[in-house]
Image 1 (cartoon, rainbow, N blue to C red):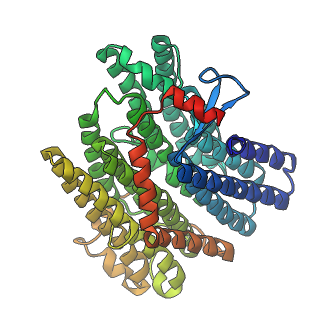
Image 2: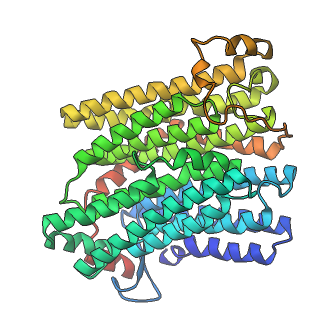
Image 3: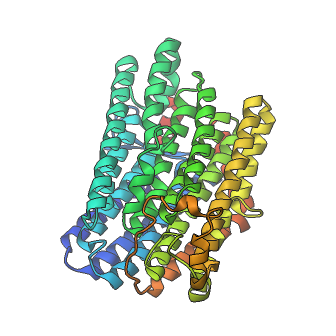
Length: 521
């Protein structure tokens, strides 16, 4: 089994090299990309089954170096589950982009650049999830940064270049802080291996631990878009092509949250900053959803809801009980899938209506009933309507907070409920205006100051593009992702049990002896 672990990273990198070689042959590039991500999905599924049934993680020391001196790749239930979900999302978005490219040519997503960048992005995501040391985690983030900058500026429009510059400057600041923290940790403890750090961190004074802790937390909070470090996200994501926005929204912030989970549960178990995290979670939820309420453009609405729902993940992490950690992992899986699906649905709306502004789009229920369903189902799921997975995840988080029972926990529960209701309101307002409102009613609606006049000055509310044909593969891919969101509800029992096992396992830090035994087995 251990021989399969490096393939999670090397296969996408080899695929990127192949698609560069066949840079002018679209079909070959598409075929290589699809086969590569499919193989990663199969391998990750096998690894997930193996580590879950045996209860033993798989550790691999790259190059044959003894642990902890070499690069360690570590696959436990959490890493394997996230690689599986990421592979599903990356494969679905790839198929969506293939349909878009076939219909539009290379104007929006130049295939020669898109496929190698996309596979390198996948390699960075997978590497971050299976990194067994902080420096390899940093390498995964940097691979992500390079590939994501290329993808976010595809098409080289003025808006994309401007927002891409903001994105890369913020990401570089985060990376510099992360690297400085790694250097400080290595200088203090002589290692960056996560298992070894879990054993040695208690040797440092509490004040030193707190400084190192806050440095890492700050770096990861920027990448995860935790308020007030989330200012860059709502302006960066909406300008990218639809497939790029979908995969960014679904995965990139979750890599930051994953890094927070690893460091909080493994390295800094004795240095408690959970109260700080709880306040940050509450602010992230409320500020994010209030930003969504004030938007008139669908991509910006979803970008702000993305920020607000990161608050739920930080909330669960800060509760720091096995039940809360299991609920957090379940909600992370839910949010990756649902958020990606909604952005794909909005990509269909943009092609069908020529706009993503709810002040411009109308009458889609009659004109495009299939798109109406593809938007509605994940929208009510994200809003937390029973019995969908969004409700299950939020209820589990609230239950875990209620068991702790402090006043701050109840304040977070109330904040989470308000955020959920406002999310549902915002998404259903968009549904009402874009799908139910008929064209003849548009003038009357816009003249009603008590209903939507406060959206008139919202950013990008007046953009209008040409309508484009929607290839069947784009609709089919979005429908497939909607089916996956429904499956998260239908199979919530087994999935939640798996997440509960992950939550229990995260309570026990990885020991160096355990890591060596897993590498030898």
